[in-house]
Image 1 (tube, one colour):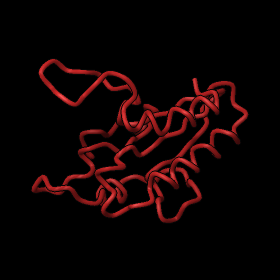
Image 2 (cartoon, helix red, strand yellow):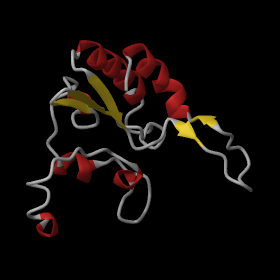
Image 3 (cartoon, rainbow, N blue to C red):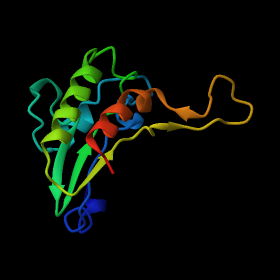
Length: 140
């Protein structure tokens, strides 16, 4: 972290778990132990999923940060999605901030690519699950 000295301690940021946090050093799927040990994030109230998802306020904005590595982590965290989805709905309902912003690694929208079968435009699997929560909570 020496390379980040003078940057991370002066510029606000929010970490989001993504696909590279779910690999071992030999590029196999693994629990995100290094990520979970490295960051100490706001308490989400779920001891089993500490630092997987969290929220915080900054001025008039409420930020909800989600772990969208649901399929990659299913072996180790089979109920991650259900618990996170309920937590997100509760978290977003509790805030009285003017703006609600959600941060997540996987896009809720899915784009088709030429020559890549089985991938149609529309909502991604994560978007299909989370967008009803965002819409009900009036996420900006």
